[in-house]
Length: 391
Ligand SMILES: Cc1cc2nc3c(=O)[nH]c(=O)nc-3n(C[C@H](O)[C@H](O)[C@H](O)COP(=O)(O)OP(=O)(O)OC[C@H]3O[C@@H](n4cnc5c(N)ncnc54)[C@H](O)[C@@H]3O)c2cc1C
Image (cartoon, rainbow, N blue to C red; front, side, top):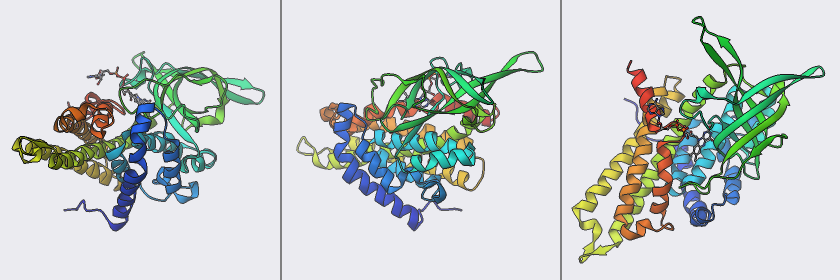
């Protein structure tokens, strides 16, 4: 039976990110949340620590670590500030990873060093106004146009909810687009979906006004407009027509990362509740002496622990080269629900203070809901699990 005990190297990484989260991230979290401002200074320091390069080889400016190392870092950041954690998660898993997994050597050499150092950020534009869970409904299109001896992609369409797409340091958004169509044997039409690299300074690319979100206020999220955006044919990422399939595999990995972030949020709610329950007095004693409060917090701890085991298991399978799609879906769903349930219970433990935005549990309450929606809703995870069961 394998153990889930961390090796010394993983433990050291987790400890150092924990210290960074407590000493550097937490003190400015409320300010950025209230101002809805992007934490540039924190991201810069995370870049210097190598966090954006954790799962990439050194030749591209990475740390030579693996996806589990990234997950451990996300858990520690998610504990104190989900906006900062999702900035890292999206920057690595949606921004840099598609280039690393599917890019040519030239694309990797051009983009990865700036992304792994966090000098630049990249986003991934899959979701559209009428294509979310059903991302096959993509309407954004790209056609090839002759320019002398060369060819350009001309891209038109709209993307919705794209993380890291409009910061001052965003340089790239990879978009899915319909590049053709094929007739199936039964006469129905199948869209050919490809992924294309779009530098954000390309004329016709616009990151529209940032959303006013319920939570993740310090994370950068915009709708995008692409109007006659012209990029060279070589900006195709991976094989033409494999864009949708490639992105689904990126999402499988991403679910482990989101599960780790959510586990951190769930654990953060436990830690804060234990501390508060030992301090807060009611009816002559600490509220932590009441079994109703003890049981609530004990249940929260069970959720955080279960979520952690679920993402450790999915990550272990992934690193061993085994199938992990279902386990990643389970981890994402269990951890997302643990974060939301724990945030609700933590605000209850905090009473009226839990409803005051400057309290971290209140921020977790607003931030955690999206963990049941982003990178695949709970219903999408259930669809994946049911499909694996042959249903
Ligand atoms: C803050 C934030 C950041 C995001 N970042 C990114 C990003 O960087 N890149 C990106 O591409 N996208 C991003 N997204 C989009 C996110 O992934 C989508 O919102 C999510 O996948 C759901 O899609 P939708 O919003 O279109 O909802 P819909 O797909 O319209 O779903 C609506 C509801 O119907 C349910 N539903 C749909 N189909 C079924 C079904 N077959 N059976 C049962 N129930 C179903 C869903 O579960 C959901 O409850 C982000 C979203 C947010 C809010």
